[in-house]
Image (cartoon, rainbow, N blue to C red):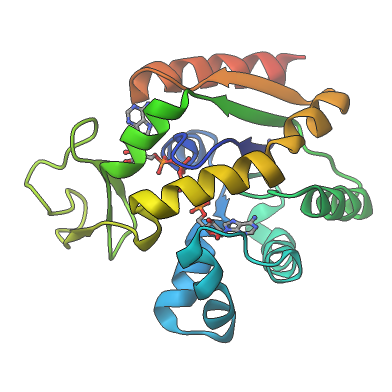
Length: 218
Ligand code: AP5
């Protein structure tokens, strides 16, 4: 399956993408993770992206589109993929459409995570991630077994630079202005599936599986 996860920052896209990637045995391509990796390794891409990310702004389309297309042509994406955090602008969506057309394949479903703003802020504020394996936790909702330590690899958990209150506001504004228009964009292509993203991780997981199973059988 070829799936796009669309939704506000902190909406739970990354959490559910990990689960679906394992379940459907398809790779998850998270532009946020790829960019953060570039920043950590101080690659030229990372150096270009850093300032935008710290301010909660989008990295320029030209940078992100090239990054994603390079991944999509790789052999492991041929039987499907989940795009988490891409596209995020109409230009990115148009480019992805062109790219898919050139391969003769199509995106099966765009899952839109719908979630109230107060819940988003709570989720982002409590998020902690593993520096090493990138596993994501939440201080209250998805706590690690041992405080500050990753259950999976034992490395320490940190708060993302862009998860501070003033950057959260900026990311939410950017989402409304530049990314939310994609809801109508994909609705008009008849591939948008709306997911109620509120409630526990497992409740969202169940609703998501229902949505994808329904889509597959159509
Ligand atoms: P990115 O990393 O994509 O951030 P985002 O879209 O803002 O999404 P998040 O990672 O914040 O949230 P999420 O929806 O994955 O939620 P999560 O599962 O972690 O992008 C970062 C930056 O990179 C951007 O600001 C931009 O600068 C740049 N960038 C990336 N893509 C770009 C693009 N295409 N174009 C241009 N620039 C780009 O969950 C959040 C928290 O809630 C976690 O703590 C989790 O444990 C918890 N949680 C999850 N689900 C639940 C639940 N159901 N109940 C309770 N807690 C939950």
